[in-house]
Each structure stands twice: as structure tokens, then as C-alpha cells.
Length: 282
Image 1 (cartoon, rainbow, N blue to C red):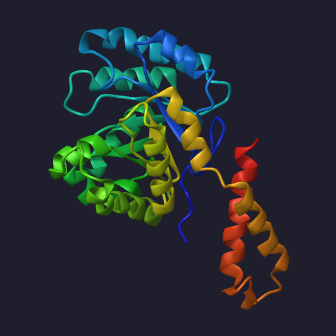
Image 2 (image 1 turned 30 degrees about the horizontal axis):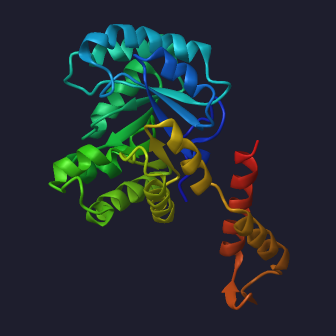
């Protein structure tokens, strides 16, 4: 079994992160509000949410925000993609700020993640957003320095030719490819954002779908989405109780329990669920 390459820094290990909140680094009030939210992970964005003319100011704001911290929670800076004018300047800012992680958008080959890791000396969360990125996701996930994959579902739909209003089943194979690549490499995997800001019921359904697929957590773009993601990706009270009962009932080998057969694998799963719940409550 492959073990995670992540070095645990600044709070929760990535596999326990339920919500990753994108915050435009050009908006000081949004950064300050993020400190009052329960998001497990803060992403200071220098890419799509920032106008080109605001990026110099946003870079400095991101550096200042990382240095000020987020009450011990992990954070990252999302830089601009390779080929954009701001890519190099963004990497310099990341190197100066030294956040635990750097998020690299539009990764299509492992070499891009390697280069950013080499320059910034930060652990890389690689965004998989294109057909080429999907095809190469297993190599990207195995690249030293990469500790997670993040689905960029909006660009993914466009690249695959899937209409924005098509159901998620249209990209389910692409999403499962990301999870497969992450699990094979021993790194975390995070679902893409939900675009409908006021549709919390739809968000809850999509979070639950992502959880059942195997994602560790979800990226979000609005403060109101944080609690939904946290709740959905946390073990429920009944699930925790069931897990504890299973562990207590197990006597070794294969045995009948609650109308089904269980063995040591099921006990390990139950213990992992209990540990996840306990660590997320700290």
C-alpha cells in the first residue's frame, strides 16, 4: 500500500480537509471574512478571480495574508498557469510568503508541477482541468512534490465539450479518473466548485455525490457553501456509532455481524472513520 507523501503542516492533514475556500487575494474584506469562517483550508487566489490590473496588489495581499495566518488552518496561494504573464511573479510571491501549499492550475503534464515545486519549494496541489490533464493525471499525481489533485470542473466541462447545464454524470468518468490517480499515488483528491451560489440543496447533493465517489473534500467559492461541505464530508453521528459497535463486536477472522459478513478490513475502515471524526473535531 502506498502511503501519503504529504508532510503535515499547519493544521489538518489534507486527507481530513472537508472544505477548501477560494478567496480572491485582491479583496481584503473577503480575506478578513475567511478568518471568521469554518473552512478547513483557505486558497488565496491570484488567477481567475483577480483582474489583470489588480494582480500586483493581490500578490502582496496574498503574501501578507499568509504571514498573518488563518488561526492555524492550512492555506495555499493559487498562482497563474504556465504561459501567463504573471506565472513567474506569482511563484516569486509564493516563495516569499512560504505558505504550506501552492495550487497550480491547468496542469497537463508532470513537468509543470515539478517546475513549480522546484522554484517555490512548496508542496503542490495540482488542478486537473483538461482532457490532457486527465490523461496524464496518474503521472502528475506520482510527481514528487505533488500532495493532492483538485478537479477543475468548469474548464473540464468546456474542454470535454460537455454543456454547462449537463448533469454531473456526464463528467463522472473524468472525476473518477482523478480519484483513481490520487489513490494510486497516495495523495488527496478534492472535488470542484459548485457554481450556483444560493442553491444549497443542490450543493448538498453534489457534495454527497463527491463523497460517495471517494473525494476527500470539496472546493467552494462562497462562504455559505462552507458549512454544507463540512457537514457532508464529516462522518455522521449514526455512522460513528455504527463504526464503534462494529469494532467492539469484532472477535477476529471472518464473522457474521448485523446480517452481513465482516473481517479485519471492515474493522480498519471503521477505525479510520472514527479517527477522522475525532481529528476533525479538534
